[in-house]
Amino acid sequence: MLDNKDYMARLSRARRKRNRKYDPRIIYLLVGALLFAAAVGTGIYLAKNRSAAASGKGSQEESLAEESDEATETEAPTEPTLSPEEIAAKQEAEEIQAVLDSYINLGLVQVEGYLNVRETPGSNGKIIGKLQKNSACEILSEEGEWDHIRSGGLEGYIHNQYVLTGEAAREAARAEVVRRAVVTADKLNVRSQPDAGAEVVGQILQNERYVVLGETEGWVQIESGYVSADYVEVRYALNEARELDLVSMAINMYDNLVISKVDSYLNVRSEPKPDGKVIGKMTSKAAGEILEVLDGWYHIKSGNIDGYISADPQYTATGQEAKDIAMVEAELMAVVNTDMLNVRTEPTTESTIWTQISKEERYPVLEQLDGWVQIELDTEDSDKAYIATRDNNVEVRYALAEAIKFSPLEEAAQASASRRSQIVNYALQFVGNPYVWGGTSLTKGADCSGFTMKVMEKFGVSLPHYSGSQAQMGKAVSSSEMRPGDLIFYANSRGVVNHVAMYIGNGQIVHAASRRSGIKISTWNYRSPKTIRNMLGD
Figure: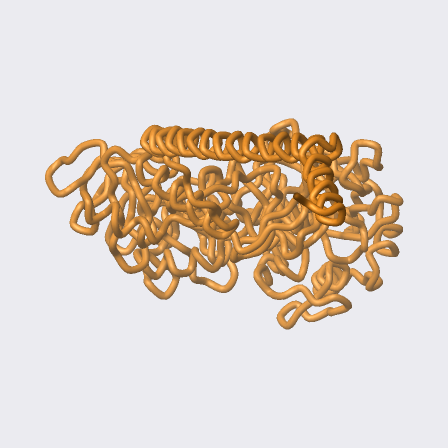
């Protein structure tokens, strides 16, 4: 039997045990713990499933992407990015190739200097152009030693000994394809500076090609100067044939050239004998065409004169000697195609017409402008002389001087006629001598009034050394009344007399014309006369 103390202790332990077993707080805690554990487990499970699913999906997408990339690379591979320099080089290579491909049967000239292009096959064919070293042509056909070609707007024949063809030509030509200015105008001025008012230093012709050295606004620089960008096409190209240059074209007009070598004038006679009638004169360095070679004489055609000149080599040059002289002497001339042509003080139709010029003369060109040229008339006045080229009334080209019509005055029975012919024939002795402003020497140089003053002085007529004062002397006569020995006066744009000449008959004058021309023969109306004066009183 338990004592009371033991009983009470057991009862207390039982109560504590019971209380621990059934205390709702404990149950709540236990239930909460179980729910939390379940939630955590579920979360971990779901997380693992989501990760696995995501991982599987990603792998699948990557696989699909790789397959897609592989397909894209197979269909259109991506080009690497090129630098601007690489792009320019690629474009240049393509343009060079396009130039080479533009020739079906390319020929490339391999000769020092240039190769002649002839009108017909054969060394006697007329030369119409030239191909410089490394110039290209399209070979149309082969005729023995000659190739029929087209190049630079010309079609002709070249000797195929000097022409590279086939693949060798294409490879050699590749290095020659550069940026060139291809002329699109008939003729184009080359100027010293990129300015429309700059000095004209040359001319180039349609289809000619020049290496481009630089470009500025509206202008292209080539080796010889500047040309307007409006009249050239700048592109990659090979050089091609050129027509004969303007000087050579002037010489090429003659098949059998003869040049006068005398200092003044060479007589052209009606017959091949020393006493044949003089029908014309060839000025110093004037040109003619030899029609026939006779014993000691050449039958020639020069200008409008058909006659005979001495074949003595001290008076005339032929062959290469003549060509060499002509290359130096040919100059740019204005050749008038109408009876009379207006001359103005400025290159505009609004400016003053101060004289007219004749188609019987060729006038040296001082400057070329658009639609106008400045010509030389006299040097004793500051007036400028401009003529219009727009109406095709004047042709501007390189030319050589040619024979002029001339017959010396015959001595007549009357004393007055004899005196006039003596004066004229005396004056003609000094043709070819120099012009010197202010000069009075018939041999060393005189100006216009100095010349007439000294000639008239020989025959007892005293004149002042000034054309304006001479024009106040003697008796005025009309052009229909004038006779050899009369003086003809010309005026400037203000109507003031500034030039004088002596009439020699046959519609001609002798005068000290200019520094360029010296004492020469001209047509009496080479410009409009102001007045005509009889100084001899008969």
